[in-house]
Amino acid sequence: MVASRSARERKAAAQAGPLARVRIDVGADEQFVYKIGCTECVVKADRRWSTYRPGDDNGFMAAMDRWIFHLREKHAGADAPCLEFLPAAEQRLHERRQQREREHPPRG
Image (cartoon, rainbow, N blue to C red; front, side, top):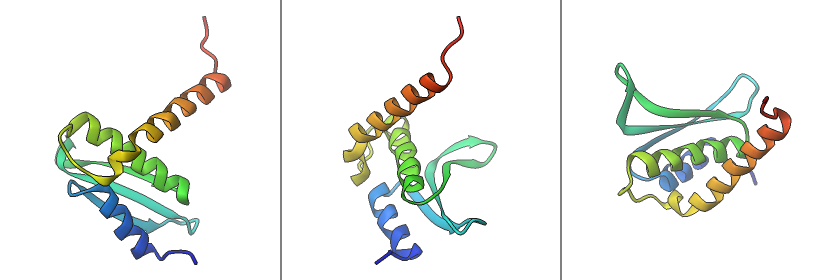
């Protein structure tokens, strides 16, 4: 059974921890759009730091990976269940970078 949007949102919010505000909307293509925002960090003018990733479960993983990296870099002492997935997030980042290098080798 596919979880409802509100159930996915609750689960993502619980994993992201107390510094996160999580919203899941439905995009024009009828896919979930994952939005995770930081309750403390302001990046430009009065805008809070946030990540926005469309897509199915990959969108969730991409948004959560960005959130994990934000927590590690800006809130080193923060505690959130998602931080246990830091090694996997780092591995996915490494794989994306390798894929990008294969597709677009450096000129030189």
